[in-house]
Length: 332
Image (cartoon, rainbow, N blue to C red; front, side):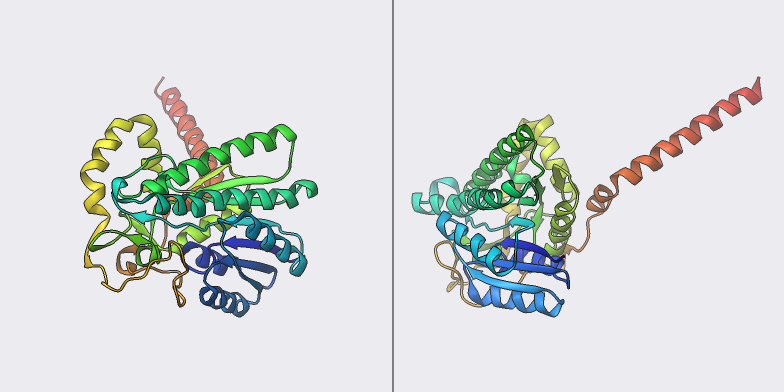
């Protein structure tokens, strides 16, 4: 039976790479975003991989639009098995330079868009008592950084909803699974089409990963009942470092994260952003930082093999302990 997957933010970046990762003969994918050109290009990639795809242009900040794409997906493709919330936008600026309408818009897309997605997915999966909702999070859901107050605030809020909803699902004994994938800096087109108030082009905090790494984690999380999945060592040390010593993380980021997010490249004077309107053309999955983006994550590889690695460590420890006992006995 083919799986039906709905992906928001599917026209570019992580959403686009995720559509490619899921694409295959046994998948039907609903592609949701505002930009039709990017969605059509994504559909072509899914078809080339042997899958089926439905293009659904929509603004996820509108709950009625999200509900409409959910209904259209199930009418055309069948019951949704996996719903993936990826859509986001932000404003790169110091807090005082972000206007109220800009802050509201970034919050509506990144936070409310995820909430409306969870609601529409759960309205269908709940009565069937099956299905998976994958929420794309961020290390910034736990640790805010400078120049990204709207995005950090939205991701913190999404994390709160995630925890609340998982608790409710557990209370009800529901078999609907909700998981979140927390990401590091990723080389996506957001650095070319999100609103940016600096003269220099913004960049992800190093080390940077390619969107295919994130897509692989999302695909794995959708098929394994893990509460949270961290991607990349930077995500691990950012989240745990903030839990253990938030004052130290704050001092470090205050000294490094402003310059670390501004490249040496001048921003194009005619640059258009997609905060309120979709950017024209097909943005693709990759941003402008291919030359320094990692194509794999050893930490993610280990996460996916946690049980096998733990078993190996226990076997090795047991063998070492046995050898030590024999050595002691031999000396007596």
